[in-house]
Length: 176
Image (cartoon, rainbow, N blue to C red; front, side):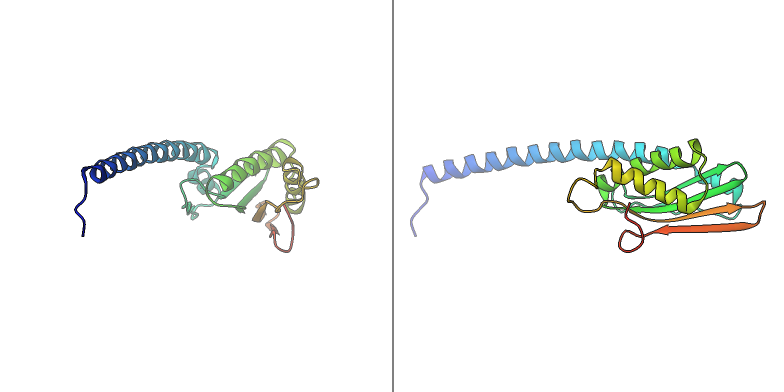
């Protein structure tokens, strides 16, 4: 076995420095990305209605919300409009950042459909949401995966003592 020359050690030392520099750059990049996504979590959580608000209408209710990643493609939504209560649980396409984009979009659209346009029929809400998402994502024009969501939506009419349900499942009921 030949003894290592000084050149070999110099080359090794230079490689160690390069690896160390790359490692520091990766750590910085990872830290910046994680900080950005953590901030996005604050924004995403700000759109969720407070569980206490739901408890005002359903005394023994609770909300279990635990994202798989820092941000999530799953969310819940609630509105009390006139004498009717609309509540939904939604699983958007994708996890993490792509799913979070979908939740922000769907939340805004639900607010428009229900709170602004006063639509309370669950089937009509899903159809309107489906139309808006397909339009927004250009799904009619592009041959791409059908991004959307699985969704269970319930309207509760305490005055009439009625519950109306509509559901959307991207695999067989309704593409969103």
